[in-house]
Length: 208
Image (cartoon, rainbow, N blue to C red; front, side, top):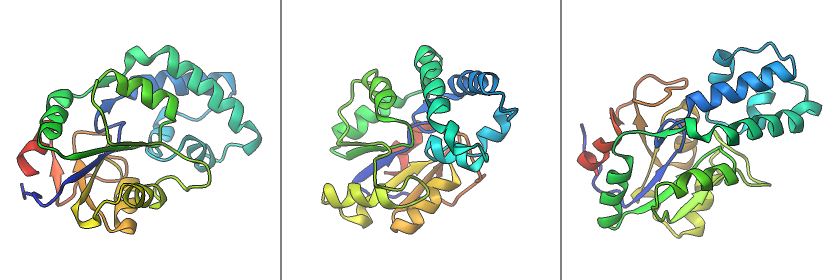
């Protein structure tokens, strides 16, 4: 495993990297599927995890006039089942280690701000930035949001690394010219391997 010890700014995806939320997603999507008679399996939905929810609906060719109602139903069901989300092993201890070592710690996720903040409060870790989908900015795989973090926080691009688990994360990083670290234990959407990877979350300590 190659060391990337020049990196001082570590930005994480949430789902599939810090958090295993598949059970929550499955329950939420099944609820949407049933209520709106979509007849779209969770396997089809799964292929698009990592991009903003409305972009997933667009990719699934769902009519735009249903987007708001579907998103509301999905979010409501997700809130009611937040007990089904679990942090991966050693997430808290590893984040504490990085915090002690004075790393800049950020979150860049396609999950909405409300649910993201509720989930992250459980960790009791102060992140330097939490970036969720934002109006007038494109979501993943666009590089808009990671470039916004770099600009607003005055970070050096060559000192940044993004840890993700999907092809959308990799495409975003390439567009932003930011190094990518693949969370191989995660959802692996559209990607099975990469030259820089971790097999479990705590491996971060070995390479930074």
